[in-house]
Length: 67
Image (cartoon, rainbow, N blue to C red):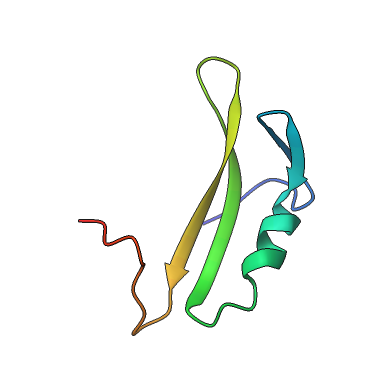
């Protein structure tokens, strides 16, 4: 897989500016997370949102109980 983009990209969500580094800083020491990536997603109406994809380590489960 090849990902293209910049790790220093800035997201603007509901008027607030933040970068993926802000998200990564908040979660990088969580032992239950093996890998993660935060991406921007443009919505049909011109707004955008940040989407965080997380891969849990073996033996850990998401607290969201999604089925």
